Length: 312
Ligand code: BDR
Ligand code: CA
Image 1 (cartoon, rainbow, N blue to C red):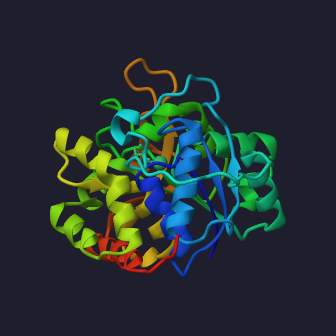
Image 2: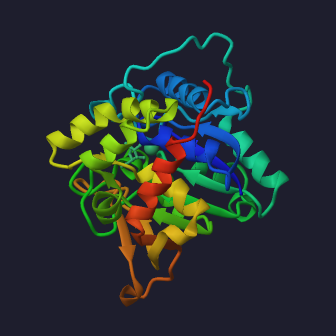
């Protein structure tokens, strides 16, 4: 399946990139970078580190996108992810991103392949919203948009009300839900928090695989695991890789429902809150929200991916 991953590469974004790079069902055409989790240049380094771990350096173009949200100052999640790759480094001399801006690339690739490309958006939605503004036919040209963001009437993770991706650029998120995409949402709570956490037993199993990829996974997830344990989450969280996985393997979805999704931009305590309304509120649905997955199947999918042998 032809797809683009739009990412603020750190921790589970790296795992989502591995899905796009290594799952035989995926035909990853581009990686587009957006401001989010950690410093922009570090995110780019993390993306190249991931391409290297997957043994696919130089095979998938990396485009640099918006370096800050549409109207707000950038907010990071460095307190959660550290540098986003567990201190991994490599000589990146000669690894050059494309010169075309990510928003231009998104618009161009969608226009060149109308109705064919899916986008997995796992960072703040700044690039996607900018592409909508730049080209009114962008949303129509995209086959499907899979968004990691928001909570389905559950808890936020950066404030009580808001999940990080929507909090960082609420104006962009609001614009995207009004743009007419065929959009599927993978929310933070309850879905990720209840069904996409890998506890110690799973983490030990992954570490024991002994592959380049399992070591890479363990390393990039280490800081987040520490943070999660401090706040009472018993394992690593995988919202971004889950988003890529459910696009490529819809059989992992056990329940998904249509909602009208909108994002709060004005609230004092509720900036970035995702209002997910079902039929009773009389609003026309504009998104499919994933509510239940085959959690064991998702874990098995990631574990099996990490058993692959790669040559960095
Ligand atoms: C999302 O925020 C980021 O910190 C993660 O990469 C994920 O995309 C979860 O709220
Ligand atoms: Ca992300």
